[in-house]
Image (cartoon, rainbow, N blue to C red; front, side, top):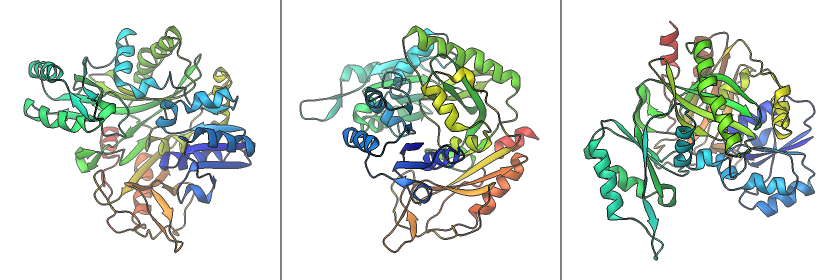
Length: 437
């Protein structure tokens, strides 16, 4: 079997590493890759946006299966193109991708189908004028401000469309609304609508679920750390670390999440004629022992993937093939009785502007099956050095018999790796450790 993975970050490196465990896969390709991925897979330098060229190459190289890792190809209809050419794949079609590509659609679907989520209001916002500039109608601004004036704070304001993690703001008081609206206007078409919703105060967990449209199988829990600084301070990022499983999320709570979120979501797909074949990411806030959906994503989370997949005993490729064939009912998910931790090293300045091409040292430190590096934003330069090439540069992953052991391994490895301006949070998993004690 030949497999192509679309995407080139930490999530994709973790997926490819897991796929390599399947003995039937003889060759893995990746579009577009990074320094770590390119050491275990063949790079194809054709982005998914050039879909005709990429599909032509898939057919020429006789690639048997395509894995869609990021959200953009699904939202852009790449899966639909693959299916037109009868190319087997793992990933959701454009219609199903609305679950992430439109927060307004997602909230409306949840509300209509009694899926637990925060109360919200949806408003029209950014429009493109004749000059190609984005502007807001005065009446829309007035309606938004009037609504916000009546609400209690904090308040969550989200751009409707995909915004690469930059479309969610928390307003702590009315004085912040103007600045937030100005920032959202910069997102242009992604902010054609705004979703304004109540702030839920509890503890957040991530739960994935595999789905083939007929069957849905939730995974173990994980917890992401979004803020750039310790203690949840500073702006949000794509994720600065993750741990799994979250042992203080009881079996009873998982049953509630399954019964009140995932099963109703599957029923909603069937009622709305949404053919959902792929992975669902549910960001869940648990408030007073009740789970509420913050958001759904239509792909593996990053960096949650880096801690979920190492603990998965069931073959990942078999799961993906079963979903493609609508045979997920034949699969049983089995998990290792271990814990996993991931710590992210980022470039100085991230999530704002940052410099690239900083030489990374320490990657020759001995890696093991339970202590290793996942590459995110890296590349090989003209001098054959591995250098930084993104905001989130790399992840150190530790696997242990308990969370404390897993974290110790991840942080020990992080201490061996260096590049100019390296930043990482030193409190990944601290909340989980305290809850377990």
